Length: 189
Image (cartoon, rainbow, N blue to C red; front, top):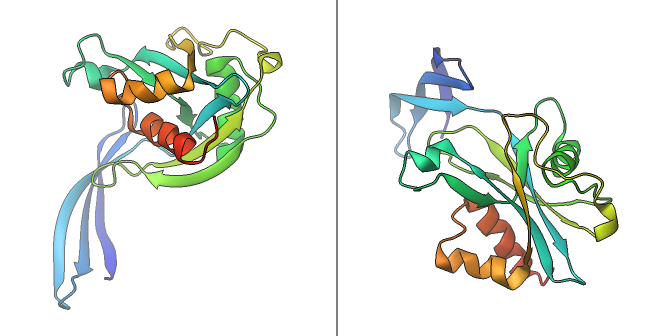
């Protein structure tokens, strides 16, 4: 399939950017088709599961997420793995910075496990997934974010409890579920 962008129109440039693309592509039968779609560009991001093998624990966060609130999450609070936008950083530098800002841990080693398009039908974002082992002596701050807009609660949970929170519906965040399943499949904790 060969695709070509014919037109790009900015629909919104507030918090992030919403574009309308008109494009052509050749389908599997050799026919050229022209379509229009909207795509939301919020930049790329990184996420990490912090785990402590000796204690059998993981560090997650809880914070308010407006989109979940307007789509049926009664209090809007979501339990998640630490994550953030790359901004101008590479994925590894980003996740080290976000880990310290959000959780208060300064991790020595992080390992990239994969990168994923999280919602490819409408969002351009690629999310880079990491795991990193932490110890109590790596706690250098309280965490919780760097400004008053971030109101992040840091949670240190037994791994089995966190993993079971997927089944109970207490964890509904896709990146967090993927990281917990990766940890389970690879015996990290």
